[in-house]
Picture 1 (cartoon, rainbow over the protein chains, first blue to last red):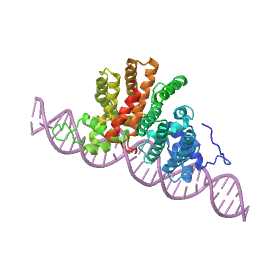
Picture 2 (cartoon, each protein chain N blue to C red):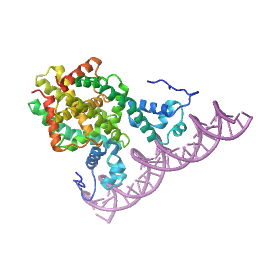
Picture 3 (cartoon, rainbow over the protein chains, first blue to last red):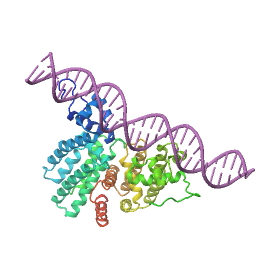
Picture 4 (cartoon, each protein chain N blue to C red):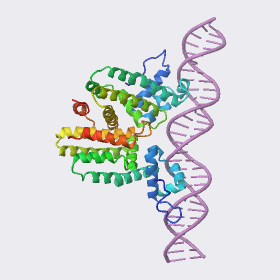
Length: 194
Length: 194
DNA sequence: TCGTGACCATACGCGAAAGTATGGAGCCAG
DNA sequence: CTGGCTCCATACTTTCGCGTATGGTCACGA
């Protein structure tokens, strides 16, 4: 999580990938605004001169990092989850993954916070559609009418995204593991047909 | 919504209240970042010189505007809603108010987006606690076990806040009035005991 | 060894937005 | 009519973060 780097090339030299990874780290914690080149450079132990060799602009880094995240984490989660047949299990797995794989969801929460940014707006829209479609299909498959499936999917998704929002920095007495599990169970019990 | 101002004093002179109101307007649409003094000054037809007479700093305006909003809208909504006896009606009324009184909820959505800001963080935390307590009490009153009431309240609140997030600028094919109503009905049907 | 290219440091320019200094126009009490 | 108070304009300084210009170092192949 906080290790120096992975490919020490020969002696401290960095690659574009290193910058993208570092960008994702600070993005998960400080939001989009925290992805600043001079700040990142200090974190990586170099100066701006390095950055502008690898990337033409800050936006380029942001885009590269987000694309990287979307491919690596997001697609992987979708692919894994959509293999589960039972929709009840599918929803459970989705919410369970919020506790494990914290990093990925922190990035998503950060992107949600900055959904007005012209660069993340299409990403959020894309992911929202995909996840909503996933949930809608699951509910339809579980016997819901098309209209009801859509509504229930929207409810589940907004509950998920609102949950991420609440468990951000702003207070809200951090739930412990036990209460969290109990909450997840309650959600599944409420949003998934018996 | 876009009227010049309400208290033209004698000839164009502004008061601190005018600035706060204008700040809330742009806050609802452009978020916290949109509350800039020179931009606001242009909107009001004056210059920065005016602003820094009424307020010592930009943060002061932000705080005053948010406080104003919290007292005027938030407290009023809470007071009105908590008078309703039936929790089913209480929840329905809460979600219904998202369509009417758009302005107030837009401000809340904007504040949610900027929940990392040191000035809005305590506000969000305060409001979240209050609304969660309201919902928890309602569910408890409706016969839920204390633990279940807390969970259901959390689910309802996160669904609400996530819903606000989805209906921001970022795409998501704007629901029309009919579909919106159908969705609300579905939510109530799902989250409120028969 | 030489030189070329990858990677980085240093120093600067620049634009946006906050905040400051100061003066001016209008109104009201005396 | 005059002094003072309120509200605002103009011009300036400061800060911060992006981006640029330019040169330096180290490795590696010919």
